[in-house]
Image (cartoon, rainbow, N blue to C red; front, side):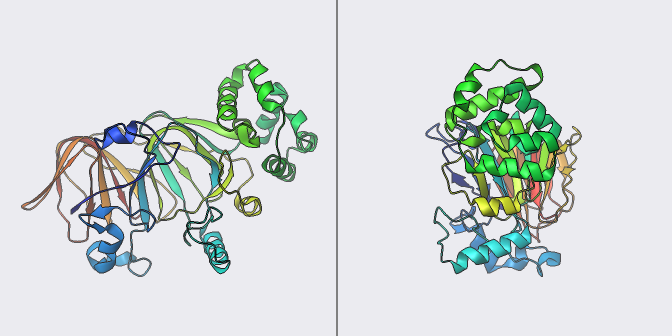
Length: 382
């Protein structure tokens, strides 16, 4: 078991305080994400060496033997994400789509750091977000009839020539045409209307968020995203799984995010970055979808697992009181202390993890005793 130093990402939408407080840094600028993984874009470090290099030099010390035929690196990426501002609306590809998209952009000679690049690797990117604070997100397309009710309540349809057909049919074909129109154009004058509207009781929060998005992204047609996507708030410790193709946008809050080891993103809106409209429409699942909210028991000294339908990763959480023997973990595992202090002890070897510190556990690390008072998560292969 080794201490793991994160890689920090300072995207403009990040927080001025959350990750800084977690890892005891001054409040200087913003930090959006804390990466704990081996992805080549921003690998974590063990001492002076990147985690990517450390595992590549001796994969048998870290990778579970049952995984060696599938991967010789860390199959997941663990992050802490902290958003003061909304992220872009985006989708992630499945494995086949990622392989094809990566090969296509490689063949076109688009550099990995080119702003036009959508596929940074050939892997899929299912993910789970576990809230650390109240966490607000848009996820999945609303029930079509609910979209119509909101559009009628706030008179949104007049901005979209495809809306009358959707209102009459409320089917997937007519919604795809509506979505394509939103993706392709401006909704001139809608910001002024949003500010003049009287809130409708059932959809007050949707209007509040549409107004916020209009201030942040004036002229972007997806400021109406809260009217067509599910607006969800996760309470701390609850989680949400995102499969390939599900449109989503994190709006505000902090959470632990775990995903397959990938950085593939196709954006739809609420961003100044590149939008590949054709590929997005090919990948996005534009049928009604409401994500399930995952909760775990609040029981001390038990690792509670968040169930996900993929093998790339698993996330477990635990409230530690006094001491517990950790169960056998799939390797490599990462332990991240979120509150309090943990002392990990294996025989005579001791490793202290105060709040914000992480350790990676390899194949030789067994019979580990955890001592202290803490709230922590464990990331590992599924």
